[in-house]
Length: 495
Image (cartoon, rainbow, N blue to C red; front, side, top):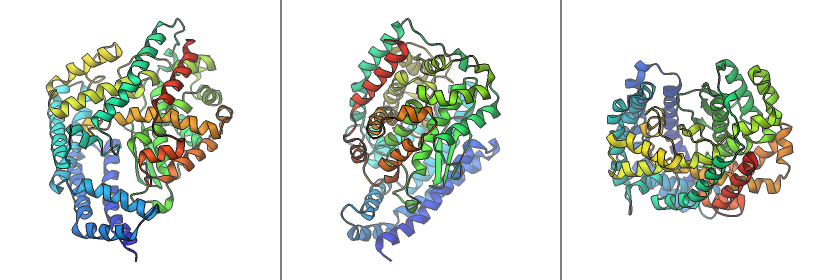
């Protein structure tokens, strides 16, 4: 057996432990009774420690070193070794005790967050959040950094990213977005989206959203959709990908939440089966991953041709919408309006929500902002960026799951995904210029096939920027997003 295959075999054991942890986490967020939290935290903690110890063991490191001598050039084997080497460089800096403690405490913190959010009680969550920030600072010290502890954390989600690089990205779009929001607010042609709020049967929402994501290409033979307090996508193999959504009085919450998570899910399902359970399978970075969820949710799912096809089916499911015509519906689902909830924000203001979180978590990690002062700081930034003040902490600083899960440094990848989504769509339209016609007829396979060919089938073989250059002809260029979003909303608002 070659050393590369020997390394794969050893890492299959690590993958199995990580998959078991992921299954437990999925169950935790979807089905687990409240009484199971303490034991579940122990289960996750011990499995994570076992996976970590096996991965960083002398035997694994020795096998990796020997495999590196064997793999070379631009081969799949060389790419596999490179990805594992990056994972090893990070993991060997983290003590097993820390890994286990982080998983245990974040599992416990999730349940505390769920209760605090439900009861609008930030004080209940504050001690757990303080501990998550302590863990983040401790992790940054283990990993090492030059300029800011945030750099060490965010690099794990987007290779090479730093606080400064995220600031540069936000600087490139902030003023154009502020100007566009101002023009939209001054427009006399304001859409109405009140028809999307009402009492909608949960079972009807489930059936419609499952039909919708299956129609665009999510494979239910290799996946399923369930309910969670905060929608997410997870996977245990290329053949087992789980979506979650939530059903609210706002019908768009389930529809666009499901389309968003299906974008993540189809990316995972698009990896080559022969790479399953290896380091090459799955999305290459969270920014690229988010480009797919935002592409399917916003560029496809909020387009006029998409609803030219699906609106009659939606009206058949929800007769209360029978009198809403296509133009009214299209403009309604694309209404730009500052709101409190990030996951239900419109395309134009969405990045402003991310800027708030990015700036606050940088300040929390550095210690510049105290956890006790977070609600006030959050509300001040929402007033500054969006001109609104949250009416409660549940729709303010308690709305996102990420900090309870110790996911610090994650949020900016959402904005990168927004920018990349338009860049990828422009490249796709050069090869498939009749996308509007295809969507209006309900034909999404050519779109999905292009994305599989250009992005999904490459998994993590290429670094994120290299993959984008291969797929679109250039590295990330914010102009695609800025031009695309202005053109779209100039049409919606007759600017």
